[in-house]
Length: 316
Image (cartoon, rainbow, N blue to C red):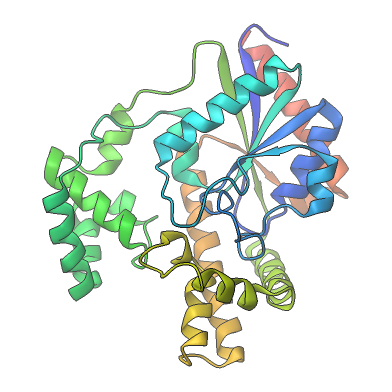
């Protein structure tokens, strides 16, 4: 191991197969997996967030999975600190930490830091919340005009993130994308990140999204949502305002037929996957691996480990 500890970090769009590949890497490196996912942290959302199965959890220890109640919020900065704590704990036990997920903002907070403009103004936030409720399109257009780079990865339905971006602009006079350029990294001097971006042809990815969506619905995604709604409203649990859960709630309110529900989830997930790839290619400085060029997950794992070892030698 080099004097500057290098962490394997595997990212990619939803449904590309990150979990199974990362497990294969962990098995070959005596590793443990740290989740980097803004929804898998929540309890009771196993199906809709595609959390690792019991079989996968038994194979390799996973961390930061199902650790918070859906009614609790967590910032990218807080999540990055949690990841850092897990990295230290895993290393102290002589294991190799491996980060895996698809949350671009969390990755950026971890590898580049969080911007210092974390000040909040509750009056501004409340006003923006009211404006959003009246006309979310107007706020989206405003963010796009001021900060098109950041707006490209903020969905209009993500009220919290859209309002927060405009709040930061009003408080600091600078758009979020500029803050990210000035941010201070959480990482310490003795660790670096070897970031691997898993990708595949979009048509193939869409087929995987379709198969996974059908499986999740068959496995009880609707029932899982109903169970959560018995405990929380959408206003109480921001996590429920996520792709899939949002559409299922509309289905339960008789706004969609079952067929329309499936089509809507597929559409939203495809759009999300494309935004993820745009973000990762533009901002993550990752080494991209097309998983379709390999015959198996074991072969992908071997290639990732080879890249990691080469990367580690460069940082010595």
